[in-house]
Amino acid sequence: MEELEHSLFIVELFNKIFAKPVAFLLNLVGFHVHDTEHLIPDYIVMVLLVAISLILFFWLSSRKLKIVPSKRQSILELIIELFESIIVDVIGEEGKKYLPVIATVGLFILSCNLLGLAPGLMSPTSKLNVTIGCALVVFTYYHWQGIRAQGLLGYLKHFTGPTILLAPLLIPIEIISHFSRIVSLSIRLFGNIFAEELLIIIILSIVPFFLPLPFMAIAIFTAVIQAFVFVLLACIYIAGAVAHEEEH
Image 1 (tube, rainbow, N blue to C red):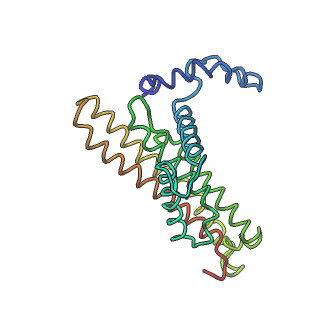
Image 2: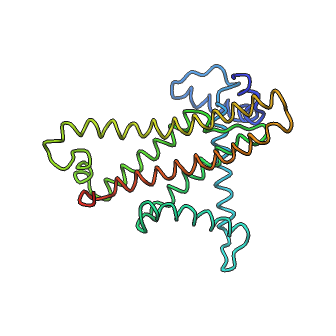
Image 3: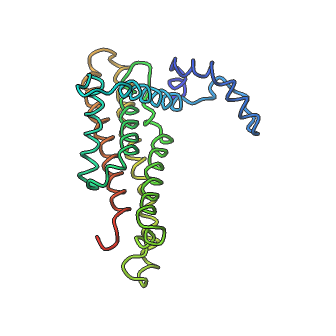
């Protein structure tokens, strides 16, 4: 697997350009780096590629918005409407204020999932570090929104239950439950994308032409479904965090 990871041309090129400056900065803060050839991991390069591509796409698509939309503007509006419909179905109309974060996470994960289907690239979400990072973003965000919506004390009532007598029992259960969401979100996404990417690589190594095509079609479907599930669960967690106690 190490040879495969380092064979990506774009990763090698990125390391040739940026590894030495990064190593210099790390040395300044006390991290002694000797090997600069493979300093920046493949998944970091792929994450940066996805992030830059999304920023450029939305910047170009939103530069000149018109009443009669162009093709790029129509695609942009369709994407926004899709995420809005999911948010409204789960949280309600007031949930539209969460659109920027939910859409960003969803599009990032979808793009990462699909990236591995391009020749010479890999899916960053086939690395557990990336999926844990996405899960931590959702985890932090829904707790923050819960505190903003209800105040710190009001939000903490979610952990204590309806009566203070049940608090010693429910607080540990709630804490474990919330932290298990990080595990659930990250492992589910990582497992599916890693498995499909590994399967396609194995099939390509055996029969390099037409046989992998059905598996690649399935991989596209899986990529979309996994991004949708991640977004849906994020919306459910936000809805639970901002819901007032009397609504339960």
